[in-house]
Length: 425
Image (cartoon, rainbow, N blue to C red; front, side, top):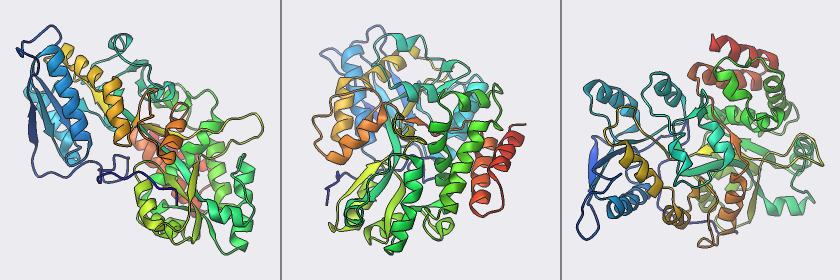
């Protein structure tokens, strides 16, 4: 088996999964000022960071960035853990009380858009011009709303298909280079007694991600989702309809495993590990350790993104987005210090720590400190990974419901797009 990276269990930060830690109360951890004198310099001072990653390796990453900040600029960093379940409610209360944090972890769901529309977050464009790495372009596009960036990514995730190399070799199959070749895998795999592609449709969000995986190809401009969110394009666009039609084609070609709508996130490792399913989706660095444990060393597996619609000529791209995002509240008291802390959380030292912990930096980085082949494969997907986010909650919900209806044979691709447009109002 291709040995995957081992690490402590971390909270799964994907939309639709158990987001963040479930703490009973907020817990603050102070990181003391460093340096010989601990004197505060320009751009320094005490800071408070809110996040929901208690119990994960991310906390140490935050602490180490705080230590570097303290040594360079002086001041203390207080790390406050708030349960995700009431994180944004607590933040709105803090706004009313005039007691917001200086830096906050940000969700890349509708809360991001809602806080921007409420003028609760600070635009960060001018700060990104100095002292930050060149972040991967697609992820910055995904965080751009109304022409501005309000969140800076520390690390990234992508979603790809995991496939059993032994099954493919035994049946003489190759990694598909086009969407048609992917659909064609269903027939030989089923004839050999395997479920082709297991997807945990029951959880809702993976159905949406099937759609996002196709929009990555049907929208070559990489702009339609962001435009549609602000009324600059229709959700009833041909590119969105084609993406939904491709999902329907996956079902009608029998590519999706039987009973896909009853499969949950915890079912996928069992199906893959027992070699009942030749492929599983979605797979990211948040669940490869689960696959590693489930296969019990019986086989090797690899990863590939959904292939392009046409081949040759088109390059395969994954879908994904930021994992940890830092935003600065509009009413933060120490903006200069907050910016410097985020710089310390996204510099070479921070990225080296992310690599060590099998997290994927948000900008090109030296990954030689991690020799795991699966990790290297995932990092290779990052630079071109397309968005898997819709920041308008009603539209996103319409997408998830629409894909469920599509796979149940109750809706057409055009009706899915129409429902999204209707949800936009």
